[in-house]
Length: 399
Image (cartoon, one colour):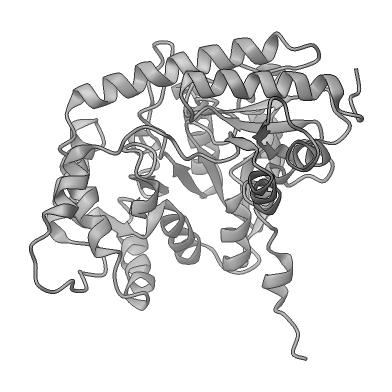
Protein backbone atom coordinates (compact mmCIF):
# COMPACT_ATOMS: atom_id res chain seq x y z
CA UNK A 1 0.00 0.00 0.00
CA UNK A 2 1.39 3.48 -0.86
CA UNK A 3 2.72 5.45 2.10
CA UNK A 4 1.38 8.71 3.49
CA UNK A 5 3.42 11.86 2.83
CA UNK A 6 5.94 13.15 5.33
CA UNK A 7 3.81 16.28 5.67
CA UNK A 8 0.77 14.14 6.45
CA UNK A 9 2.65 12.27 9.15
CA UNK A 10 4.13 15.44 10.62
CA UNK A 11 0.94 17.47 10.91
CA UNK A 12 -0.55 17.02 14.40
CA UNK A 13 -4.19 16.42 15.25
CA UNK A 14 -5.83 19.58 16.55
CA UNK A 15 -5.88 19.70 20.36
CA UNK A 16 -9.01 21.82 19.96
CA UNK A 17 -10.89 19.13 18.05
CA UNK A 18 -9.16 15.81 18.73
CA UNK A 19 -11.44 15.00 21.67
CA UNK A 20 -14.59 15.42 19.56
CA UNK A 21 -15.28 11.63 19.40
CA UNK A 22 -15.28 11.51 23.22
CA UNK A 23 -17.65 14.48 23.36
CA UNK A 24 -19.96 12.80 20.84
CA UNK A 25 -19.97 9.62 22.91
CA UNK A 26 -20.77 11.61 26.06
CA UNK A 27 -23.72 13.18 24.26
CA UNK A 28 -24.92 9.75 23.13
CA UNK A 29 -24.98 8.82 26.83
CA UNK A 30 -27.35 11.74 27.37
CA UNK A 31 -24.84 14.09 28.98
CA UNK A 32 -24.75 17.80 28.34
CA UNK A 33 -21.29 18.93 27.22
CA UNK A 34 -20.25 22.53 27.83
CA UNK A 35 -17.91 23.43 24.97
CA UNK A 36 -15.10 25.59 26.30
CA UNK A 37 -12.63 23.98 23.91
CA UNK A 38 -13.24 26.06 20.79
CA UNK A 39 -13.52 29.75 19.93
CA UNK A 40 -17.11 29.51 18.73
CA UNK A 41 -19.00 32.38 20.39
CA UNK A 42 -22.74 32.12 21.07
CA UNK A 43 -23.05 35.85 20.26
CA UNK A 44 -25.54 36.42 17.39
CA UNK A 45 -24.06 37.31 14.00
CA UNK A 46 -25.04 40.89 12.99
CA UNK A 47 -28.42 41.07 11.25
CA UNK A 48 -27.00 43.21 8.44
CA UNK A 49 -24.79 40.27 7.43
CA UNK A 50 -27.55 37.67 7.63
CA UNK A 51 -29.95 39.89 5.71
CA UNK A 52 -27.41 40.52 2.96
CA UNK A 53 -27.15 36.79 2.31
CA UNK A 54 -30.92 36.29 2.53
CA UNK A 55 -31.49 39.12 0.04
CA UNK A 56 -28.85 38.01 -2.45
CA UNK A 57 -30.52 38.68 -5.79
CA UNK A 58 -28.02 37.62 -8.44
CA UNK A 59 -29.15 34.78 -10.69
CA UNK A 60 -25.71 33.16 -10.87
CA UNK A 61 -23.24 32.70 -8.01
CA UNK A 62 -20.12 33.62 -9.95
CA UNK A 63 -16.42 33.48 -9.28
CA UNK A 64 -15.17 36.75 -7.86
CA UNK A 65 -11.83 38.41 -8.55
CA UNK A 66 -9.13 36.19 -7.02
CA UNK A 67 -8.25 39.03 -4.64
CA UNK A 68 -11.90 39.37 -3.63
CA UNK A 69 -14.70 41.65 -4.78
CA UNK A 70 -13.38 45.14 -5.41
CA UNK A 71 -16.35 46.72 -3.63
CA UNK A 72 -15.50 44.70 -0.51
CA UNK A 73 -11.78 45.49 -0.68
CA UNK A 74 -12.47 49.22 -1.03
CA UNK A 75 -14.90 49.18 1.88
CA UNK A 76 -12.52 47.15 4.04
CA UNK A 77 -9.65 49.52 3.27
CA UNK A 78 -11.87 52.39 4.44
CA UNK A 79 -12.59 50.44 7.64
CA UNK A 80 -8.87 50.07 8.35
CA UNK A 81 -8.19 53.73 7.56
CA UNK A 82 -10.87 54.75 10.05
CA UNK A 83 -9.04 52.86 12.82
CA UNK A 84 -5.65 54.37 11.96
CA UNK A 85 -4.31 51.77 9.50
CA UNK A 86 -3.85 53.79 6.32
CA UNK A 87 -3.90 51.46 3.31
CA UNK A 88 -5.38 51.29 -0.17
CA UNK A 89 -7.76 48.61 -1.41
CA UNK A 90 -4.99 47.09 -3.57
CA UNK A 91 -2.87 46.45 -0.47
CA UNK A 92 -5.11 43.63 0.75
CA UNK A 93 -6.45 40.30 -0.44
CA UNK A 94 -9.71 38.68 0.68
CA UNK A 95 -9.00 35.11 1.75
CA UNK A 96 -10.88 32.00 2.74
CA UNK A 97 -10.71 32.71 6.45
CA UNK A 98 -7.75 34.12 8.31
CA UNK A 99 -6.23 30.65 7.97
CA UNK A 100 -5.68 31.05 4.24
CA UNK A 101 -4.20 34.50 4.82
CA UNK A 102 -1.56 33.00 7.11
CA UNK A 103 -0.81 30.18 4.68
CA UNK A 104 -0.57 32.54 1.68
CA UNK A 105 1.74 34.78 3.71
CA UNK A 106 4.07 31.91 4.59
CA UNK A 107 4.09 30.57 1.03
CA UNK A 108 4.87 34.04 -0.33
CA UNK A 109 7.62 35.03 2.11
CA UNK A 110 9.34 31.83 3.23
CA UNK A 111 11.28 29.07 1.54
CA UNK A 112 11.19 25.44 2.74
CA UNK A 113 13.64 25.15 5.62
CA UNK A 114 13.31 28.79 6.70
CA UNK A 115 12.55 29.47 10.36
CA UNK A 116 9.85 31.58 11.98
CA UNK A 117 10.01 32.59 15.65
CA UNK A 118 6.71 32.42 17.56
CA UNK A 119 6.09 33.07 21.27
CA UNK A 120 4.56 29.94 22.80
CA UNK A 121 1.93 28.90 23.68
CA UNK A 122 0.55 29.80 20.25
CA UNK A 123 -2.51 29.09 18.13
CA UNK A 124 -2.08 25.42 17.38
CA UNK A 125 -3.01 25.64 13.70
CA UNK A 126 0.15 27.65 13.04
CA UNK A 127 1.78 24.20 13.18
CA UNK A 128 -0.29 22.98 10.26
CA UNK A 129 0.32 26.08 8.15
CA UNK A 130 4.07 25.92 8.81
CA UNK A 131 4.27 22.23 7.90
CA UNK A 132 2.30 22.82 4.70
CA UNK A 133 4.74 25.59 3.74
CA UNK A 134 7.85 23.64 4.83
CA UNK A 135 8.66 26.26 7.46
CA UNK A 136 10.23 25.44 10.84
CA UNK A 137 8.68 27.00 13.94
CA UNK A 138 11.20 28.16 16.54
CA UNK A 139 9.38 28.75 19.85
CA UNK A 140 10.27 31.30 22.48
CA UNK A 141 8.49 30.41 25.70
CA UNK A 142 6.29 32.82 27.64
CA UNK A 143 5.22 32.09 31.20
CA UNK A 144 1.96 31.92 33.12
CA UNK A 145 3.80 33.62 35.99
CA UNK A 146 3.69 37.00 34.21
CA UNK A 147 0.45 36.39 32.35
CA UNK A 148 2.27 35.24 29.17
CA UNK A 149 3.88 38.59 28.41
CA UNK A 150 6.36 38.83 25.56
CA UNK A 151 9.55 37.06 26.71
CA UNK A 152 12.59 39.28 27.30
CA UNK A 153 13.73 40.67 23.99
CA UNK A 154 17.27 39.38 24.55
CA UNK A 155 15.84 35.86 24.89
CA UNK A 156 13.92 36.25 21.66
CA UNK A 157 16.91 37.66 19.78
CA UNK A 158 19.01 34.66 20.79
CA UNK A 159 16.63 32.54 18.70
CA UNK A 160 17.60 34.41 15.51
CA UNK A 161 19.81 32.29 13.21
CA UNK A 162 20.89 32.60 9.55
CA UNK A 163 17.75 30.56 8.71
CA UNK A 164 15.39 32.95 10.51
CA UNK A 165 13.05 34.70 8.10
CA UNK A 166 10.41 36.18 10.37
CA UNK A 167 8.51 36.50 13.64
CA UNK A 168 4.80 35.72 14.13
CA UNK A 169 2.61 37.10 16.89
CA UNK A 170 -1.11 36.95 17.64
CA UNK A 171 -2.39 40.13 19.27
CA UNK A 172 -4.52 39.90 21.37
CA UNK A 173 -3.25 36.39 21.81
CA UNK A 174 -4.95 33.10 21.20
CA UNK A 175 -4.60 31.00 23.38
CA UNK A 176 -3.45 33.15 26.33
CA UNK A 177 -5.56 36.31 25.98
CA UNK A 178 -2.42 38.44 26.44
CA UNK A 179 -2.52 41.89 24.81
CA UNK A 180 0.87 43.10 23.57
CA UNK A 181 1.65 46.71 24.43
CA UNK A 182 2.97 49.35 22.04
CA UNK A 183 6.30 49.17 23.88
CA UNK A 184 6.57 45.41 23.32
CA UNK A 185 5.70 45.82 19.65
CA UNK A 186 8.35 48.51 19.25
CA UNK A 187 10.94 46.11 20.69
CA UNK A 188 9.89 43.54 18.10
CA UNK A 189 10.14 46.21 15.42
CA UNK A 190 13.76 46.89 16.35
CA UNK A 191 14.68 43.20 16.00
CA UNK A 192 12.79 42.91 12.72
CA UNK A 193 14.62 45.94 11.33
CA UNK A 194 18.02 44.88 12.67
CA UNK A 195 17.87 41.39 11.18
CA UNK A 196 15.79 42.25 8.07
CA UNK A 197 12.89 39.93 9.00
CA UNK A 198 9.19 39.77 8.29
CA UNK A 199 6.76 40.51 11.10
CA UNK A 200 3.56 38.49 10.73
CA UNK A 201 0.68 39.69 12.91
CA UNK A 202 -2.56 37.78 13.46
CA UNK A 203 -4.90 40.56 14.64
CA UNK A 204 -8.30 38.87 14.40
CA UNK A 205 -9.18 39.69 18.04
CA UNK A 206 -8.46 43.42 17.69
CA UNK A 207 -11.86 44.52 19.02
CA UNK A 208 -11.56 42.49 22.22
CA UNK A 209 -9.26 44.53 24.48
CA UNK A 210 -10.24 45.06 28.11
CA UNK A 211 -9.66 47.20 31.21
CA UNK A 212 -9.13 50.40 29.25
CA UNK A 213 -6.30 48.94 27.18
CA UNK A 214 -6.10 49.76 23.47
CA UNK A 215 -5.01 47.64 20.57
CA UNK A 216 -1.94 48.90 18.73
CA UNK A 217 -1.57 47.39 15.27
CA UNK A 218 1.75 46.29 13.82
CA UNK A 219 0.64 48.18 10.70
CA UNK A 220 1.17 51.38 12.70
CA UNK A 221 4.84 50.67 13.47
CA UNK A 222 7.15 53.14 11.76
CA UNK A 223 10.25 52.05 9.92
CA UNK A 224 9.21 48.50 8.98
CA UNK A 225 6.30 49.22 6.65
CA UNK A 226 7.63 46.78 4.03
CA UNK A 227 8.21 44.04 6.61
CA UNK A 228 4.73 43.77 8.19
CA UNK A 229 2.10 41.26 7.04
CA UNK A 230 -1.20 41.44 8.92
CA UNK A 231 -3.87 38.73 8.96
CA UNK A 232 -7.48 39.45 9.78
CA UNK A 233 -10.88 37.70 9.79
CA UNK A 234 -14.61 38.28 10.19
CA UNK A 235 -14.94 35.14 12.32
CA UNK A 236 -14.49 36.64 15.77
CA UNK A 237 -15.25 40.33 15.21
CA UNK A 238 -18.74 39.54 13.92
CA UNK A 239 -19.26 36.12 15.56
CA UNK A 240 -19.33 34.73 12.04
CA UNK A 241 -16.88 31.81 12.14
CA UNK A 242 -18.59 29.77 9.42
CA UNK A 243 -18.47 32.63 6.93
CA UNK A 244 -14.82 31.73 6.26
CA UNK A 245 -13.66 35.14 5.15
CA UNK A 246 -10.36 36.75 6.12
CA UNK A 247 -7.81 39.17 4.73
CA UNK A 248 -4.09 39.44 4.12
CA UNK A 249 -2.93 43.05 4.49
CA UNK A 250 0.49 44.47 3.67
CA UNK A 251 2.08 47.53 2.11
CA UNK A 252 4.71 45.30 0.50
CA UNK A 253 3.74 45.19 -3.18
CA UNK A 254 5.85 42.09 -3.89
CA UNK A 255 4.01 40.11 -1.23
CA UNK A 256 0.60 41.14 -2.57
CA UNK A 257 1.56 40.22 -6.12
CA UNK A 258 2.97 36.87 -5.02
CA UNK A 259 0.06 35.99 -2.73
CA UNK A 260 -2.31 36.84 -5.59
CA UNK A 261 -0.77 34.04 -7.64
CA UNK A 262 -1.60 31.57 -4.88
CA UNK A 263 -5.06 33.13 -4.71
CA UNK A 264 -5.52 32.66 -8.45
CA UNK A 265 -4.64 28.98 -8.08
CA UNK A 266 -7.60 28.53 -5.75
CA UNK A 267 -9.72 30.77 -8.04
CA UNK A 268 -11.69 32.94 -5.58
CA UNK A 269 -12.80 33.31 -1.97
CA UNK A 270 -16.39 32.24 -1.10
CA UNK A 271 -19.03 34.42 -2.77
CA UNK A 272 -21.67 34.31 -0.02
CA UNK A 273 -18.96 34.82 2.58
CA UNK A 274 -17.88 38.01 0.84
CA UNK A 275 -21.49 39.22 0.72
CA UNK A 276 -21.75 38.67 4.49
CA UNK A 277 -18.30 40.14 5.15
CA UNK A 278 -18.93 43.30 3.19
CA UNK A 279 -22.33 43.84 4.81
CA UNK A 280 -20.82 43.24 8.27
CA UNK A 281 -18.85 46.45 7.88
CA UNK A 282 -22.18 48.27 8.36
CA UNK A 283 -22.72 46.71 11.79
CA UNK A 284 -23.92 49.47 14.16
CA UNK A 285 -21.65 50.52 17.06
CA UNK A 286 -24.27 49.38 19.59
CA UNK A 287 -23.58 45.78 18.58
CA UNK A 288 -19.95 46.02 19.67
CA UNK A 289 -20.80 47.81 22.90
CA UNK A 290 -23.09 44.96 23.94
CA UNK A 291 -20.59 42.30 22.84
CA UNK A 292 -17.80 44.04 24.75
CA UNK A 293 -19.85 44.20 27.97
CA UNK A 294 -20.82 40.56 27.58
CA UNK A 295 -17.22 39.35 27.23
CA UNK A 296 -16.04 41.48 30.16
CA UNK A 297 -18.71 39.91 32.37
CA UNK A 298 -17.88 36.41 31.17
CA UNK A 299 -14.15 36.91 31.66
CA UNK A 300 -14.50 38.38 35.13
CA UNK A 301 -16.85 35.64 36.28
CA UNK A 302 -14.77 32.79 34.91
CA UNK A 303 -11.37 34.06 36.07
CA UNK A 304 -12.70 34.57 39.59
CA UNK A 305 -14.37 31.15 39.64
CA UNK A 306 -11.23 29.40 38.43
CA UNK A 307 -8.89 31.10 40.90
CA UNK A 308 -11.16 30.15 43.80
CA UNK A 309 -10.58 26.46 43.02
CA UNK A 310 -7.70 24.99 45.07
CA UNK A 311 -4.54 24.56 43.00
CA UNK A 312 -5.87 26.41 39.94
CA UNK A 313 -3.98 29.39 38.48
CA UNK A 314 -5.67 31.59 35.89
CA UNK A 315 -4.16 34.91 34.75
CA UNK A 316 -6.60 37.67 33.86
CA UNK A 317 -6.60 37.99 30.05
CA UNK A 318 -6.22 41.47 28.60
CA UNK A 319 -7.93 40.58 25.35
CA UNK A 320 -9.54 37.97 23.06
CA UNK A 321 -11.75 35.42 24.86
CA UNK A 322 -9.35 32.69 25.98
CA UNK A 323 -7.17 31.90 28.90
CA UNK A 324 -4.47 29.33 29.56
CA UNK A 325 -5.11 27.92 33.02
CA UNK A 326 -2.92 25.74 35.24
CA UNK A 327 -4.76 22.80 36.83
CA UNK A 328 -3.61 20.54 39.68
CA UNK A 329 -3.63 17.41 37.50
CA UNK A 330 -0.96 14.94 36.41
CA UNK A 331 -1.71 15.27 32.70
CA UNK A 332 -4.18 17.72 31.16
CA UNK A 333 -4.60 15.54 28.05
CA UNK A 334 -5.71 12.62 30.21
CA UNK A 335 -7.85 14.86 32.37
CA UNK A 336 -9.70 16.42 29.44
CA UNK A 337 -10.41 12.98 27.98
CA UNK A 338 -11.49 11.66 31.39
CA UNK A 339 -13.95 14.53 31.74
CA UNK A 340 -15.75 13.31 28.64
CA UNK A 341 -15.42 9.56 28.97
CA UNK A 342 -15.69 8.93 32.72
CA UNK A 343 -17.05 11.97 34.52
CA UNK A 344 -20.42 13.64 34.91
CA UNK A 345 -21.87 15.99 37.47
CA UNK A 346 -25.65 16.16 37.45
CA UNK A 347 -25.40 14.66 33.96
CA UNK A 348 -23.19 17.52 32.76
CA UNK A 349 -19.53 17.64 31.78
CA UNK A 350 -16.99 20.06 30.25
CA UNK A 351 -14.85 20.00 27.14
CA UNK A 352 -11.57 21.94 27.17
CA UNK A 353 -8.45 21.98 24.98
CA UNK A 354 -5.27 20.51 26.52
CA UNK A 355 -2.57 23.16 26.33
CA UNK A 356 0.27 20.82 25.36
CA UNK A 357 -0.85 21.16 21.75
CA UNK A 358 -0.29 24.92 21.90
CA UNK A 359 3.42 24.51 22.70
CA UNK A 360 6.19 23.49 20.31
CA UNK A 361 8.60 22.64 23.13
CA UNK A 362 8.03 19.01 24.22
CA UNK A 363 6.76 18.58 27.77
CA UNK A 364 5.36 22.08 28.22
CA UNK A 365 1.69 22.70 28.98
CA UNK A 366 1.22 19.31 30.57
CA UNK A 367 -0.80 20.76 33.46
CA UNK A 368 -2.50 23.51 31.47
CA UNK A 369 -5.67 23.86 29.44
CA UNK A 370 -7.02 26.51 27.12
CA UNK A 371 -10.50 27.65 28.10
CA UNK A 372 -12.66 29.76 25.79
CA UNK A 373 -15.22 31.89 27.63
CA UNK A 374 -17.59 31.92 24.67
CA UNK A 375 -20.75 30.79 26.50
CA UNK A 376 -23.28 32.90 28.36
CA UNK A 377 -22.83 33.37 32.10
CA UNK A 378 -25.45 30.78 33.09
CA UNK A 379 -23.67 28.13 31.03
CA UNK A 380 -20.26 29.19 32.33
CA UNK A 381 -21.59 28.88 35.87
CA UNK A 382 -22.65 25.28 35.26
CA UNK A 383 -19.39 24.51 33.48
CA UNK A 384 -17.33 25.85 36.39
CA UNK A 385 -19.37 23.74 38.83
CA UNK A 386 -18.57 20.68 36.73
CA UNK A 387 -14.89 21.50 36.58
CA UNK A 388 -14.67 22.13 40.32
CA UNK A 389 -16.32 18.79 41.11
CA UNK A 390 -14.18 17.01 38.55
CA UNK A 391 -10.98 18.31 40.12
CA UNK A 392 -12.14 16.95 43.48
CA UNK A 393 -12.60 13.44 42.14
CA UNK A 394 -10.03 13.08 39.35
CA UNK A 395 -7.70 10.14 40.22
CA UNK A 396 -4.63 12.00 38.91
CA UNK A 397 -5.02 15.14 41.02
CA UNK A 398 -1.62 16.42 42.16
CA UNK A 399 -2.65 18.55 45.17
